[in-house]
Length: 526
Ligand code: NDP
Ligand code: BG6
Image (cartoon, rainbow, N blue to C red; front, side, top):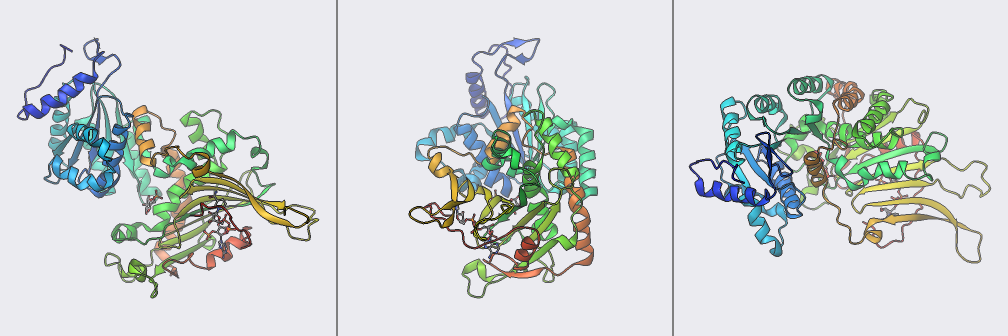
């Protein structure tokens, strides 16, 4: 410990407090070759855009939960950086309603905030980033310290901020990792420009592109379901599967995010990233190993087999208010004051993707997503073919394997059974793995908790690689450009409905059969 240099600083008392927390954690510190700690290297997590919505709603709460559960390396110091002239106390105030602090956790919560610091600065001035670097060095005694940089910022400053990080704020001693939030560009060209820019600054293994759906329990489970169960693999192909339906629904509208949303639309907001990521995990071949690059190689390979989506293969919708609805439901998308009155931006989209490979040729992958619908739901529905050589007079219904991502994680197989008793009738039933029954006491962490922890651990498995991203844009860019050029009028659907009825027709045309006869008898209907 004698080797720790305690810096002089105007805020001596506060700094001394932090240093004592570092010292406490570095009980077994050895310094070898000048600066390398044996074991306990300090970590620094910098949130750019610390005063903003994403930081306060998601990032600070996530950091707190990870700290609370002793999952972060010790010691970790947290730096907020933004233009606003605010103090840690004010930042804490902004975050409090999202932190979910229990009375028994108060002491630890205080400790967490003591490890937090705030540096005010612009996004475009190198000198401000130098200042941030100085502050970090002061508080880590200018020793080896690993740094994570999180960009909770609008995309228009990604380039300048990452350049400034590279030029002024990188750890010289210790590793550096940069986390970037979507949107990663708005089409193939702008995304390529951003990727080229980042690749000049950082190695690919230093870049963590977040798609938070990759942090969800059931999305992470797809690999296990598919590749650790003999029962599914022989049927996972065009010989057995009729169609695959991947759905995202939200029961609320753009809620004041209309400005951002109108620029992007639902295809860029949800389909091109969250739903396509799920599709690639459902459709990819078995990777050679669980190494992140082996998995991502397979994801890229399947994406390469998908042709760009055609406008004819889509249904686009925009919600209108429900005159009989309550509160926000009365308001349509165009009633949002931040949305232009003549906007044709879709708030609902269905697109049929075709995978041109030996496994999937002819199997439609139907992606559907929408705002202001009848429920919150994200799921994958794999619908099997009709049984050949029917002997049940058409009474048997197709099997479905449903992987419900949220809410209420579950995997269920819809199947036919003989009705119990003295009868030879048949009925639809299910094999059901509901997590709230089977794993009653399991704690399922939030997607961001898993992903931020992965960054500390250096695991890239659940992050988007640059070639995945460029394939995703290749598939959607022609469609997005066509929509922007031709401005097709989206079909109106009422707030709180299932979306445009034309979407049902499109599903039916693409080998998805809806019977309307299945009844769920469980008590955990959500
Ligand atoms: P359904 O047969 O009711 O629905 C199958 C699919 O058809 C869904 O994708 C549904 O979604 C779509 N659909 C619904 N209405 C229509 C329509 N009019 N035209 C065309 N398509 C339609 O079966 P589910 O698998 O959805 O099960 C019914 C309920 O039982 C669900 O709430 C489910 O969560 C629950 N359940 C829960 C389980 C569990 O918790 N473990 C296990 C089994 C069932 P959409 O409206 O999004 O288009
Ligand atoms: C975000 C979208 O990526 O995902 C939002 O920008 C959407 O529009 C959100 O509401 C949904 O995330 P979740 O985890 O609530 O399903």
